[in-house]
Length: 67
Image (cartoon, rainbow, N blue to C red; front, side, top):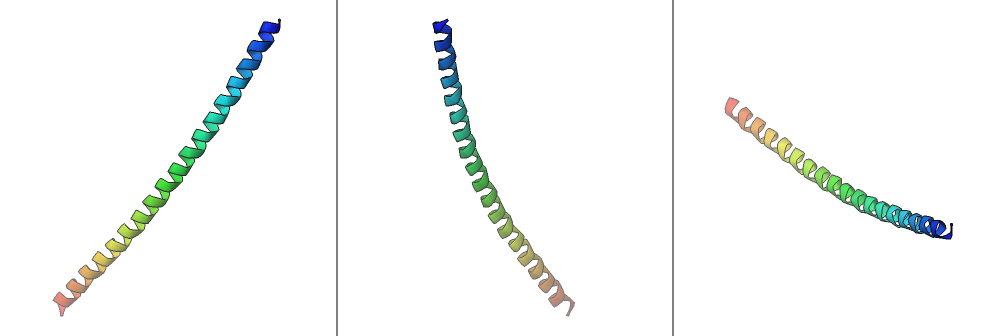
């Protein structure tokens, strides 16, 4: 009986340690995901600005050709 209680206590400690490790890994992955999302958003903003600039330049060239 005492051996079973010791085994259950060890199992409980192991489960707690695993749970803590999983929570820490989840936090790390969440931070990485947030960083990736921020980087993507910044690159998307630059790309959008470049597209708008290119379109404006193309319109200017087209308008100059019509004059």
